[in-house]
Length: 105
Image 1 (cartoon, rainbow, N blue to C red):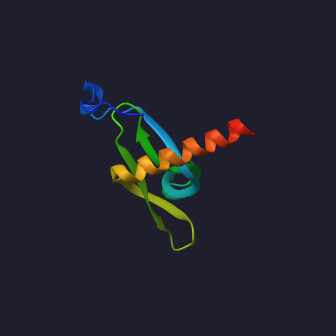
Image 2 (cartoon, rainbow, N blue to C red):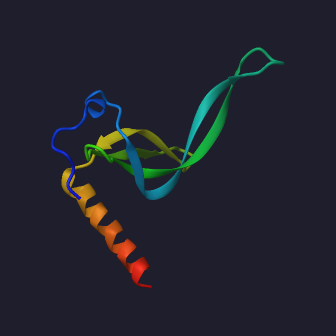
Image 3 (cartoon, rainbow, N blue to C red):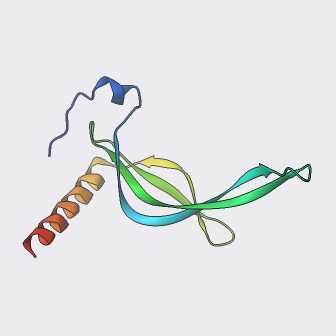
């Protein structure tokens, strides 16, 4: 599938239409939460399962999560790094092969 060379106005403004893929990981982070009873703040640890890569279905731009290990052994996401075009084209080829295998069976 060939993507457009001239992305539309929304992609130029940074409003992409993301499609998430890649391996599934659990990330954790801490957020401050004020207690009603005691004046002071407490940190609440939250976690969520996310996918490691995403690709814009309009312009074809790809990003991958920057993951770091916390001292307690959990993972945190500190941002996104751009994927080279060859990396997400290879991922797309693998997904198409898996889809073909499922259709044959």
